[in-house]
Image 1 (cartoon, one colour):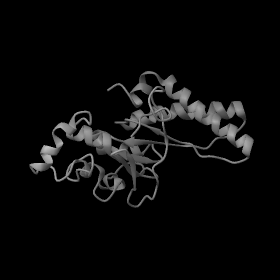
Image 2 (cartoon, rainbow, N blue to C red):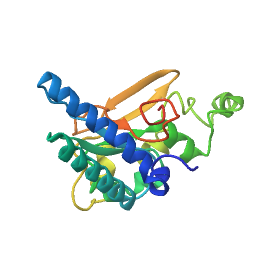
Image 3 (tube, rainbow, N blue to C red):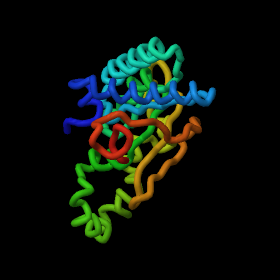
Length: 212
């Protein structure tokens, strides 16, 4: 749908406003406390490297404006959540413009299996009972489908197997939900924790983003 970074491509001022608020807050904290913070900004629903490249350029321009206004250089990192099949398949292209990855297994499960959490409960128990799935894929990852997209050795594996150009994202992890508990697992060989402020519609839950 019309959400995530697609909104930023059409209405870039929304993400620029949110990024500016993050950088101004970081600058104010540094001025008041003398301590630095490292904002980590996550761009959601990316499907192509070009999307992240263009949005990252806008975020960097906002950071430069805040530096000019405040006289303070606010370091930050920018990354994305891999939550759509195309993004998983083209993770190497996206990694060229990302400093960290998260894999959103909730949306990735929905988009890969063509399911919606809104009504999947009406039939998934039957699928488990009849042996189509060993477990509810929203409770335990579908390793044969979603797991293959993520990479059976961890989120970093997929890009390595596909010989991603440029470089791997500096950090990667896998995120999802079981019930109402947010789950995080470190990516193999990366050791980077789930992190980042997701920029998106200001009226949704989460600072500028969706709740995963």
